[in-house]
Length: 321
Length: 288
Image 1 (cartoon, rainbow over the protein chains, first blue to last red):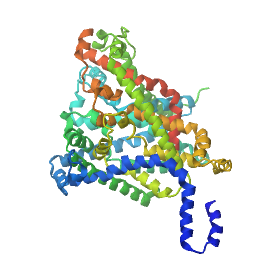
Image 2 (cartoon, each protein chain N blue to C red; image 1 turned 90 degrees about the horizontal axis):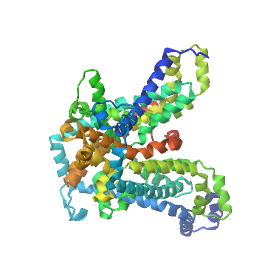
Image 3 (cartoon, rainbow over the protein chains, first blue to last red; image 1 turned 180 degrees about the vertical axis):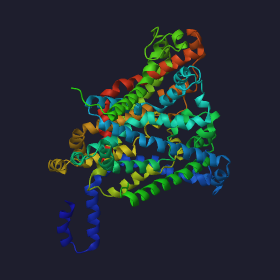
Image 4 (cartoon, helix red, strand yellow; image 1 turned 60 degrees about the vertical axis):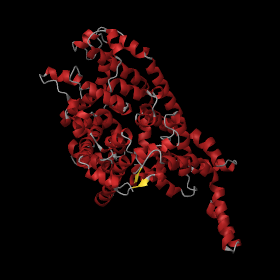
């Protein structure tokens, strides 16, 4: 519409400057209400998303609450050096990476398998029931999931230990054993999100052309072959997109649940970058140091998701951007 | 009527039943234990069904004024937060969905970028602090006013509304705000409900904001209280001795009762609102 209106103006006005000015006015005329609608959103993103990004300059300063960002002294890369020379640096990196990797390796295929099983179900009522039930834990708070995990795994009367007791195994203090933490965490993640994450695959499954199944049946394909040659290729774009997103998030493990499930006795495996940042920054008040570690990881994470996207673009022609 | 049951079918049904049991059993167990008398809990006799049914634990939990304060706080944060989030997000999403909006693409890119990179916990805290939002109601609702994901979801939804509807409004003399309020909003009730529910659940379950931004006890929402009671284990010993019995066991029942009290609202309304959530997730799934 705007294009059509501008044609007569262009013919009439020979001078460039007034024309440009009128284009600006028209832009304003066309957009002012939309801009007004967008304004709160813009303010939000500037204040709570972009100002903190510029606030990252405190990682090069000795930030002091009383002096503020500008008055604090520049210290260059002091805090980055401090982190790289910290004996805990490698351990924290390893813990963060391994926890994310385990979550990816076990947590990523789980919903795909569940979705495929649900898809094979003929009974619609049972299918709906399983779906409804399995989505539920996604809406339970991390505090409750962590509480449940800790209480069920408790060596004194916890549900799991009672169960193990029946088989004569006995009581294991799960939350005090560093070697157990990753397993417990990943299982709780799967329990919480497996159902919800099937939705994307179930949506993709409904889009698979039923004629392909018919054709495969005529060719005498077994159920497994149909699954392999029709169903999986049909949902592979969804799988690839989710995989890229998940690889990108390997290092971005949710702070809340790890923080709630860990305790000093198992820091050896349970302490990850974000919980360390919280302790150093928020509890001990070392803002610059905490923010430096966070930024360091944020950049690695950005590289991760970029790399995953490039890789998938080359291999499968599916990508996020 | 006997269908041929292939082994594949049997195994998959078994696995799905297993998923259902593993998902539901913890809740059933917690409910049963919290409703049982301590003698039976102590002997580990309670699994599916309460033994020696009594409501002692619930009387204690509900008799504690702290839980009511926390409930009230959570309700306020959730309702106010959802309203603010919906206003800001829907208006922003609508303007970003209009093709005639100037700088639409660069703005969208700048917004999407925040999904992959952020200032992080500490710089955000410092901003919230310098705005004077620490330990205020606004600190709970403003820093999370827009979820980038929900914004993109709504934008996708608005882009799907036929242009003709907007044109008809323009002919009737409405400006963009009028079109949004009079035409777009009434048309999109279902997707508003969906996004509002996402926000509401997020706010209800939020733990990190109160952890970072709240200081005073009487501002704490349910999640923080729960964490203090259940995880930090600060059940006031007075409660335990008042009931008698084995402290450890009574404490367990008491914790389960606390968990049930704070989860029950979600467990009860969930089956009715579930379809909205799924719808929202589907919009997201289609667009990737």
